[in-house]
Image 1 (cartoon, rainbow, N blue to C red):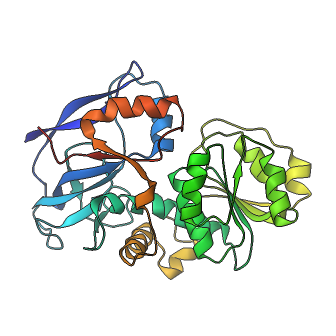
Image 2 (cartoon, helix red, strand yellow):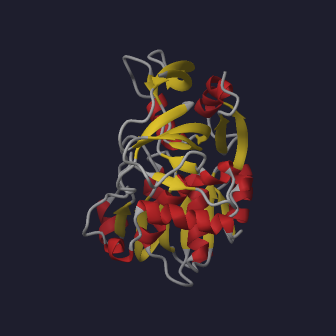
Image 3 (cartoon, rainbow, N blue to C red):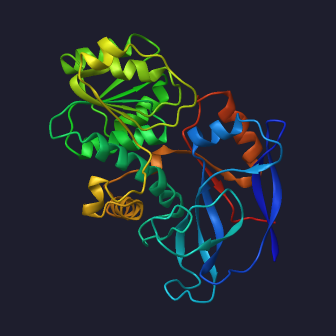
Length: 334
């Protein structure tokens, strides 16, 4: 057993550092020394704002190096770089099993992909699955409300699917500037006018596909209003709470299709026959990055020591200004 640092959310509503004991890998496990983790701001801010009775770990995207392999594991070797589903902490023992099991995923990272770039495969998988669910066709208009990391990656995949125009909607010009690099053909600042009318004007009546990648639940009502008749609205963000919508004018009379994006692992999913599982999506994201087709470097605004985590979460809690992609560096663990 050894003691490694980790990030926790405390009962008094703060982020802090403490430690956790990590043992050697059990049978069927690999022990991974973590080098980089990525903050999933939507999900983690939801957790940050939720009440708790004890310190709770946070995060789920981690890149590291296999340190040891347990009995019965022959498919991995010490020294291999891998992406795993793990909290913000210095090391973790991970089950090696079905790669589409959320906690048993151990994804090899190609040589042409950096540690920082590799962290984007998890949210890239989320964004890619959302675009698959929404199914924009060549030349169809897409509007993406919310330009955090999921929104930026959704914008990229919509453009790659052949959509046009691809409209990025956000309150911050700094994020919309990133959106253009991510593939947006048009941008709308929702703080300087009516975003629904702006999308309608750009598309001649409404976008064929609207993706909600925003955290504020109220944005969903605007997404419905911005969709064309017979269009699709995909909920791809992680909004807490509820929202009130007008059923007849916004849903019934426009004959909208509303789909969720949560990546349920059920055999009836139409993409399973094409093998588009979570693991396959992540491998595709790796490949796009390695080939230079997907640029994620510009999305990283903070790559800091894990020791700065309390300050970083304070920044995130204050609002979305001044940051986008946040990574923690674990290579200098004490």
